Length: 576
Image (cartoon, rainbow, N blue to C red):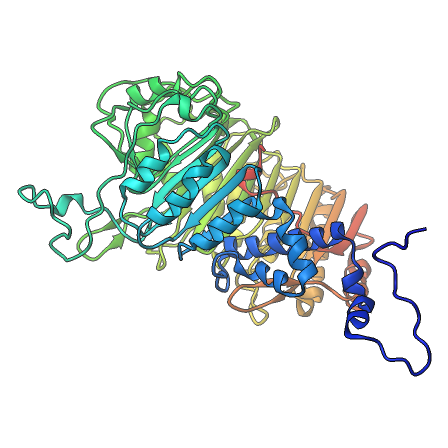
């Protein structure tokens, strides 16, 4: 019987020394089957991609780190080079590494390839020349944040036939602005503007349907030109226009007419695109649309929406307010609230009156979301970018009340609010606006161990104290049956438990009994980025005992558990 290649070498005799080859073979890692090695390589690749996407603390140059695996030994190199699946996803960062591009195209065999080139500098000629013979294999092409002069090589490449292409994204460096307004009209060969910066002419080309028979996603970003001469792509599902340049004056009504010809279009995203709003009213988005995102200055958003007929209630909508800085000192335009983007006629957004769950969510310090979701799962997200030095105090709970008051809201969630205070008064005003609340959850809050100034949980409990009824003499949130609170610091457990017990006792005295209380235990590590830490088992048991002892007789169901990522998914994932 043939001995498998992964078997151990024969046992050596006493005093016999192994050869270097046998020593290598005895190492367990060298006995791994090729299939396991391939899984390890793929896992490492994915980790590197996540590092590149996050850009923290600094992204690796291209995806080079995973190539170190090829240098471990000859066998690893042979396995990697002989696995086309490892080479089909090509990511080039900054330096236009044509060798990497060439190797990837060679080792991927005839598999479809996904190509992404980001922050590249210089000319694209060499990269496009290498890629051109393989245009028929390109499934996804993303050329983003380029710091290159738009040249003929890219335009010529985009006129190739790409029968497998499903995704195409084009955009130039977001830090460099187009300077068409500074050009000398009498000097057609001008290469620099009056400030000495390179001139960035719009990049445009006019594709044909036959080139991209499977195109499903098209993203045209900064410096890329768009016109209604673009063909109608019958397979297009998602269109994104972000800071692109309109070639001519395009009326919104004409643009929507062009859109309506796409029978499969489901997602539309428009960011800072100056369509003409002079003509037309009661305009309608394509009936096939399921997700619509509009990002602009607040008055531009409200003007755009004011031209529309009432949007369908099964359409997921997101409006994102950008900061507008006013001359002469660059003062941010006020008010800075997200709801400033909403049109005066709220009937254009009938979903506002149908939401049953409202959410305060803050992904980063400079942008926040006010989300409403209906019982059918449709969502509306009202977002705003926050200036570095806000000229006024933000009231997230006030935004919830302003946007959704009168809707049958049964659940209110605060999933993060950074260092923006949710005071007792703001909580009370918000709770008065939603009398049918059955569940309130605070799954993330901002706590300084030495000060409870920002603790949203404590202020919520103070607002829920039934000793101060509402204007009609009713107990605040009389329908409330579920309360969910996060406990971020062990040093505050006793205080929070006492505050919860006092609140529940006060409400019980007024005939309002809570059915379920959930406490989410976690620990925080402060730093440049605040991180949640896993609790040790002894610490978890010790902290859990604090709440069980104080609260087990005050509520029907008490659940004290370690925090997990129980927050709702980001808006982008609510309906995927």
